[in-house]
Image (cartoon, rainbow, N blue to C red; front, side):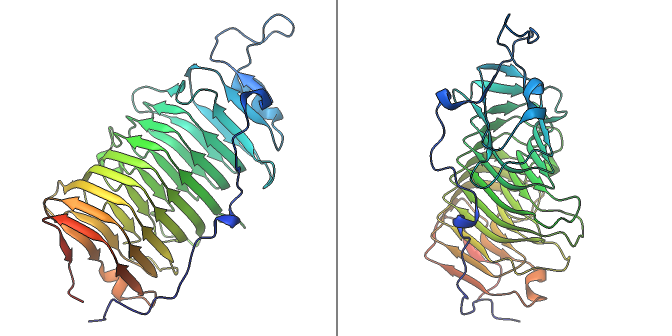
Length: 335
């Protein structure tokens, strides 16, 4: 049996690699205003624009401000800002631009083959996915409220290998009541691909989110994702089918050096509906630092090591300064 505590090779996700919008632009700086009004835009007669009216003409630095109201799906394809001039889509008043779908079909906000985009302040409900990104990079998803969706709340995935699939910041979102249609796919935040692929994803920061009432992992990091920071998230009321509340690459596909940091999260009230021990953090790949987390539950495991961790060279795992209470057992392997 390999010993699973190793001298830890320090790593960090450098947020400087992300594009940073230090301060949200004010409403007065909106370059486009869009409305949920059903009246068509007629120059000089009314000022109601829909997102469809403006999306083909977006340029780096544009800020699209959504008035209060109910909207159908918003989709971006081939929309590219720059590091210094991202394209921003935002609700003028937080959560009052409501993207409401029905029957757990469709995607609230879909992003494909796009980059340097900020999504901020929306309320999203009723679709299959809340926010879904495919083959995109340099995305900043913050301060959104996503609830009552058929599968994942936020899904970042790769269909085709590209030169860049990196730099994602998911911060201060509230995600609740996922998996209403397909409970097995009810992850709060899902990053990567569950299929064997050579496509890699790197530089992912998941910070300060509130995630609750999911029907599978709150945060699921797949095998082809590396350089991941999971920090200061508040996670509760998770009903697992398998794996852990936070899952780090438990598949048997070939691994990358994950370089994961799971730091200062609060995890409480989780269970496994299939009769397995409930797990807070499932580790199938390294390198990993798990530090400063607070875990409260009546039973279950804090950390579960998967066999895939024992069969690859990226097996450096450091666990330190965590607080456990209730009936939590430390791990499934004595170190």
